[in-house]
Length: 217
Image 1 (cartoon, one colour):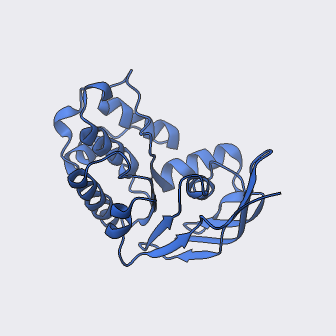
Image 2: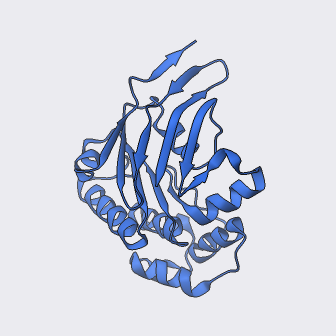
């Protein structure tokens, strides 16, 4: 679940972004839409505890994020949030399997190789476990990043512009995988996009419109 109240974020010498209150139940879905630069990625970062708000409250999976100290917040994020960023941030110095192993380190948990293999198998990329990200196709890399995001069965799955660099067929497949993965985990799914294909795939989700909410002071 996600609940925000009076949420705002201020960039140094830049805009102040304000967001309307929202309640998304556990297992629900939210479409975060608006043009580029409107604050979608900022909202995702606030919910993930990567940024601290200038005002307001964020509660995620029954946790008031502001109440977490820095180290606690990192561990909480690792165990609670699955994040599929627009830039996938896979380390080319490591194999696919070792990229996923980093998830356990970040969450302060013991390594579970069987869970890694199961996640890769579920997303049909088990055959590339020993390859490095630079040896993968774009579609394979996105599936690996999604496997990483769902590895610990997160309570919230956040995706930032997941279809932006994909052709129509791949975009449809990516959205199908996101929805199926969230459902398998029982996770709340949030997709931020200005892509009509992504919006269409989130038919029936709650909508949070952010593009009209940026102001400068």
